Length: 399
Image (cartoon, rainbow, N blue to C red; front, side):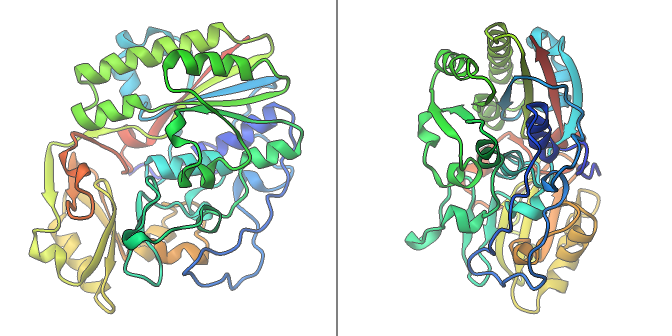
């Protein structure tokens, strides 16, 4: 089990390090309000852990720069990149270190860690699909959807100030270059508040927009590419489609680097890695896995299992027995106390975590097709605490 290295070696540590490289002394982010349908915090204002503490030194020790660009490649795990250097010669030749994604190793959680500089237990985006406390509804944090036409306010579900808001207060106008379809979505509003969104759909457009934003001084630019992850889900990492996408990423990184003005630093990282499933179990068709279960959330490699009232001990026992030798299966309390989500989990977020958390460590995917039909047809998955899913690269180019 590779428990994320919160506090000095995780994605949550990178945003504050980038601000520190720009000379920004990070300010106290303030006190988030509790989420809707959740109990209020009993302990009053609580300081955010890690990099949001005022004056905390740069834990990743990034060198100063007048301009920083973060190239975020969805699904570019460090283990995956090391396995195919021939498809990415530029990236494979860069100065490199390895970070851990955070738990679960999934896009919404990692994007929020990168957007806030907080571990998951602080920002509350604890998985792909989460139960809304006090209801029997699953909330998809990626698509930002609830059943029955219900809606969720991004600033209530994720109230922590973003690093982009903090950068703006320091006189830096951060920019985010990504497909137009993501502009204004609930997820974007939750994790990119305060950023100047620069829509760009093609690779050429993203490179041009990034170079445009990097002409400013100081500059703080993030550019996102998601097609590698999509290829991995559908065809599997290491497939021809995936390798073709990796070559595109490699070329894109080289072109981004070649257009950097003097005094710039380009960092390339990812939100998670991936494994190819060799076994799938439909949890909705196994009687032992459905008895006492109200909702199955999370995703195939990091399941949140929500029990009916009083049934949590039985559900924990049944899931442990079923997945013995294939998955770590723990109670909510065990997951929190083991630091899976970070040094602490805010009281207001606790009910978002399943009564039982099931995390495969073999190449197993735990499916729930009624709630997650598209996921059932995937080849590649992520979310767990294996090195292939947790380890992400931090690659560096300087001018």
